[in-house]
Each structure stands twice: as C-alpha cells, then as structure tokens.
Image 1 (tube, rainbow, N blue to C red):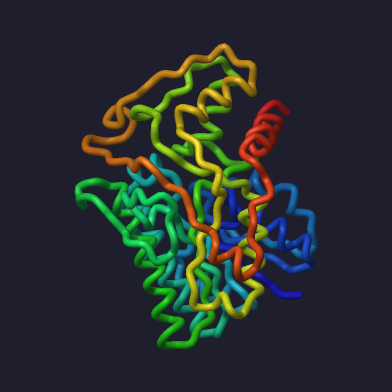
Image 2 (cartoon, one colour):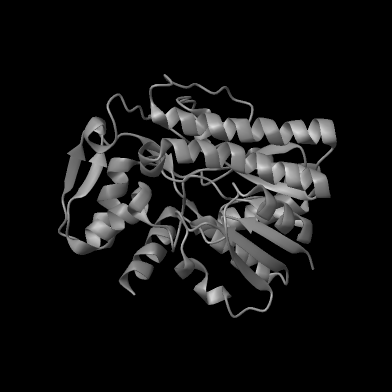
Amino acid sequence: MAHALVTGGAGFIGSHLSEALLARGHRVTALDDLSTGSRENIKHLQDNPGFEFVLGTVLDEGAVDKLVSRSEIVYHMAAAVGVKYIIDNPLASLRINTKGTENVFEAANCHKRKVILASTSEIYGKNEKESLSENDDRILGSTYISRWGYSCTKAFDEFLALAYWREKKLPVVILRFFNTCGPRQTGEYGMVVPRFIRAALLGHPLQVYGDGKQVRCFSCVDDIVQGTLALADHPAAEGQIFNLGSTEPITIEELAQRIIMMTNSASTIQYIPYEQAYEKGFEDLRRRVPDTSKARHLVGFEPKTSLNELLRWIIECFEQ
C-alpha cells in the first residue's frame, strides 16, 4: 500500500485523515509543528508500526523535500486555521499558507508525487449565492481586513496547484472544505461548534457574534475524510477543484439554541459585536452553503452524518 505524507497530520482534520489512511493499510508520515495541532490528537496512532510523526514545519524546505521523496502521495493539510488564529497571527498565517505550500509543490514536482491540497470555503469570500459551486466568483473586502488575507493565500495555493498541473503535468486535486467539525477540534481558534458545546456544558453564556443570522453548513470530519480519499483515488479528479461539505444549513443563532437544548443546559445566548470579538471593521458573510454535485457525480460523495448526529457525537466526546 502507498506511503502517504500528511502535512498538518497532528491537526484536527489531519489526524482523522491519518487514522483513515492507516485503517486502509497505508503507511503514514505526519508532519506538524504543533502550532495548532496536538500530540494528543495522534497519541492513539503512535503504536501503529505504519505511523511516523515528524515534528517540523512546511516552512523547512529541506525537511519537506526529504519527506516528500520518501512518500508516494502528499495530503497537504498544513495551514493556518480558524478566524481568530488568522487575525491574531496574520504574518505567520500568510507565510505558512504561501511559502509552506510552495515548498510542498516544489518538492512534489521534483519527485513527481501526487498532491491533495486542502483548500477552504473562505475562497468564496462574501459571495452569498444560494449554494456555491466551484466556478463561482470570489467576492472579497478591503486588504485592511485580515480575514481576507487568508482567503487570498488559499487562492494563491489553488493557483499554484493548477499551474503545476498545467505546466508540469503534476497530478493535483484541490478540495474546498466547508466548516468541518468533530472530535479533537478545539474552539481555541474560533471554531464555533466546540466553543458553543464547551460553554453549554459549563453553563456559560454562548457568545454569538453579530446578530446570529449567518447561515452555515457543518460537516462531519468522517464524511470529509471519506470524500477526500475517494477523490484522491480517482484519476479524473486530477487538475480539478471540489467542494466537500454538508448541505444542511442552519443559522448560528439556531445552532446555539439547538446545542443548549441537546445538552439540557441552563446557558443563555449572549450577542457580541464583531468588533469586540475580532477587530475593527471585521466582515462576515451571511450565507455559505456548498453545491457538492461535482463530487457527488464523480465519486458518489454524499454526507452520511446529520447535524444532530454530529452534535451528539461531539457532545458525548466532551462529556467523557
């Protein structure tokens, strides 16, 4: 079976992906600098003879080249994550998402290794179309707003991947993840589901930013990982971009209410202005729902986990 390199392999999605690859019989090397990842996320994998953890960064060109040369496929998951982290660490976010990705593709091209690039729904910016498809326009705000820098770096990553595909014939697959959730995700960097669940279980107010009418779709990490593996396996996915996510929309306010109900919590909802939560001039988007028909038509991608099932699973993990 293949030897896979998973950059960001100790992160939330990266650790679940590493676990799924090992279950398939693959060997896995996980590279992570633990800036947002955690050894706790991969401790259950450490005794697996097919698993190797390397403490390091995608910014280390030599280390990346060495690890890519030893692997047969690269899952590039390493990136700055979470709105709060990106705003608090703008320079680090820009460098990781640009220079780090450039190092990965340069090494992959040198050794002719396939790359699966984790991108993001942030690519679409403020486009509030009913459901977003891969060819839809990007609508961004001022460069004074840190959030849009993240969208731009991930767009750069996609342009870079497609350039290597077109000019060098390097096999690449680009996946845009939409609000992926599950066990091991922390609310520390702004992820709303673990943040709400933790607050509800502690009886603290659930802090909703803005008016809470923003619409999102929350995807189960297991569904996202299975979609990732299916698209990685399919030759026709090469040189293409795919949305992966749930298509079950909910407002942030409704999400808070549902979590309070499901945890039998006495918590209340507290509305916090964006500028108090993030930075002056912060912009959010009212709606972000994916059109996943492209992935469905090619590999049969269909999320199997409902939002209630996903929330119940995460709540149970918090309660353990």
